[in-house]
Length: 449
Image (cartoon, rainbow, N blue to C red; front, side, top):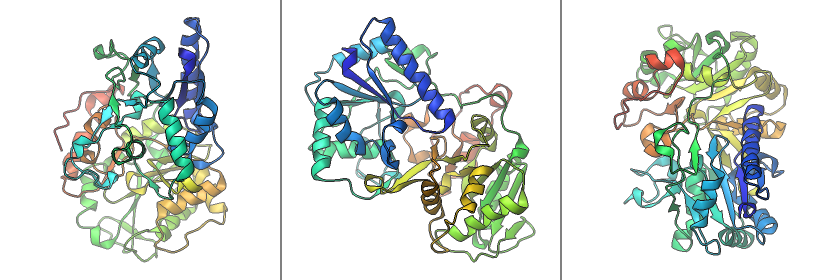
């Protein structure tokens, strides 16, 4: 029965995202009403919980168990851009015995072991399957109840959340004591207009969001963090690839080199962390380099980014709101903790966000503190939510499953390690002529990088 499915939309509080999630909720309820069925429960995850970690889902299991453990059969999770055919979803879930423990989804796997999964299953990474959230995924209530019980006896450890879909699958699997992911062919990530989707219960709208005109080139200020030892090898890559897409760009270093040119911020280089340098960049953005530009992007010298696509994406955000955008990681979210934007994929700030941050007393606890984590802690303390976009990437294309990247138009990747970064840029990030003309998704020739 439809009323036995609890729908959880993995939503966010930023106004652009919460509106999309509300639209999806309305669509699910309308389909249910049109079927003459009793309406199911549809919840938005960002409204569900007082603490920062609701998006990591496991902290909610005990609430799910208490509230839905008796009168529901399934909890079905999806993203705001997942599109659901309610009738087909009912049919699909109906094939599984809801009194048993099931973990259902569209399976992803690593082709080679990767840093973002702590090199798990290094001997054969393809054996471990984890769900593509974009296709939707489901837990049967007996499994939810079991997880809730386990969480009660063994609370979550304070740890990093890096790739949630992989970490949830590991937690459920329990080194073989719990169920594997069961792949469900009806959970799809093809676009709703694709010829492949006749059998699908779910599809995914996988265009780059565009809300009106792209943000003007002059409205995005780009700050590149570098240091003297990388002037010779990393900066030339930026110049050969994406620098020309940026109207306003400055390179910040520990040494002024007029050939680039770099700006010495007077902050000594640190081997890790860079907190002092980042706060100096924020200060400079607000007061010197660009006193009126609405958007700031801070990247590393080995970040590969499409400013062209970023400008499209930013058309969906209101620069008058405090926006802090990028790829979201978490620290200690099972026990309080905070979310942060991981620096390598690029950190995007609205001017208001920078103003609020610098007006607060929150600063680096040491010059070499991890800047991205300190920023996360500060924004969390200010009650400014972090906005996640899966189009920013902390690692290289080869570090992500092909099936996952296939429904994205990426904005950034990071690191030059063991790859030709210029080739990666031109394969994955350079605007094609067709894209520049009409913004539609195009077939890229993405040879296996």
